[in-house]
Image (cartoon, rainbow, N blue to C red; front, side, top):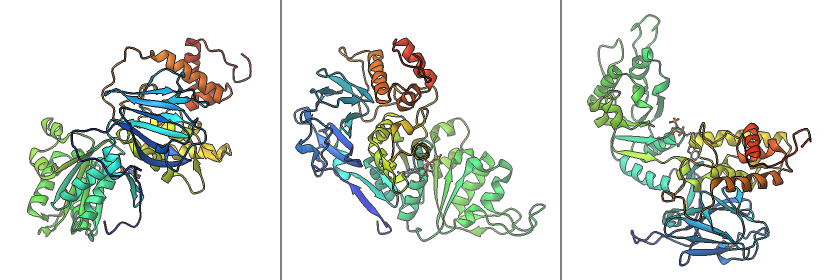
Length: 455
Ligand SMILES: Nc1ncnc2c1ncn2[C@@H]1O[C@H](COP(=O)(O)OP(=O)(O)OP(=O)(O)O)[C@@H](O)[C@H]1O
């Protein structure tokens, strides 16, 4: 895009994707190494890949903390398995050290040395598009694909963006505007959920002087303000049905009648709506007028939640840090493990909190232990059970898989060792409350010293 001021891209090391639509390319995405975010696709050869210091697939960013023969990763057509080949510093799956010599299912994130790998059943999108930053906006392959659809849609008059809260819908709406012929006009963003019902008509359509008591000047509505540009209506289904009917008339007739006005005013705008709800279901339940749905509900794009775009997380963190601060691998690992129900908004807010905590401790880097235990975790959900695994087929319990409590014990023991037996710090690193960790310690019969040093 011509308007792009900044463009940096983390590209795969292995060139463009294959074009055979049928042939998936399973492998690992290396998302962190050498203290930096990266997005490098590592293909498996005949279903397997051996990783270690000096391995050619690690390219120029080698990892001194990896052993020469560190671990092997294998894909069985459904699931990824990782086997530690006797490494010195261990291999960690979802934060827990795995025992050496036995295959362990690789789920969300694998750590070897200071490098992080995320399994992917198809590397081709990453190979073809990489992860790029355009005007501070991080765009992985899914976002780039969606923006290609948005570019098509920008030739028309409307777009509907469906996606969970905090996924970046407003950023997509701005792209719809800046790609359109109205890019030099205004972009007016309105959160319909925040408009009091009694003020909705006045704020949207404007009011003439004297239209109601206290209206001592003409007031433009959002629609008039967006004339010649794009009106972004976030949470559009929150508008009441009478206002929806009036909005439809404006969009169809391209003229708006302000409250108290006798003559309508011509307007010409694009409209982009967004919601985290399924609009068809909203029509079915009577919350959205069907005729308005046909005017604003199509074409539509769906923005995937952040947990399905893990390749963006390290770069989001890196770019979200204050100047001079650095990321520790443990922070990125923790963030890759958590489901982030509040998506990018929550990730960035919690990064700020973690950065502050690290600052207060005088730490030079922001670490996993600086994240709040409940950051990025859905209410009532255990961290050991992520909401949905990215890019992996539905998981079944494999016959040889170890039951969860054994994993849990290993994970807790490892974290305790890393934090010198301090329960509070260990709980923080594991993303749980101190009392929750105490319960687990009792259940697994793991003895620790109390905070005051008593065992
Ligand atoms: N890909 C991204 N790169 C950088 N920042 C992003 C990205 N996506 C979202 N953000 C940031 O996350 C925050 C939330 O994004 P945004 O407001 O666009 O989400 P939304 O989906 O519109 O949320 P809501 O539905 O709650 O209004 C913003 O501060 C935005 O700048």
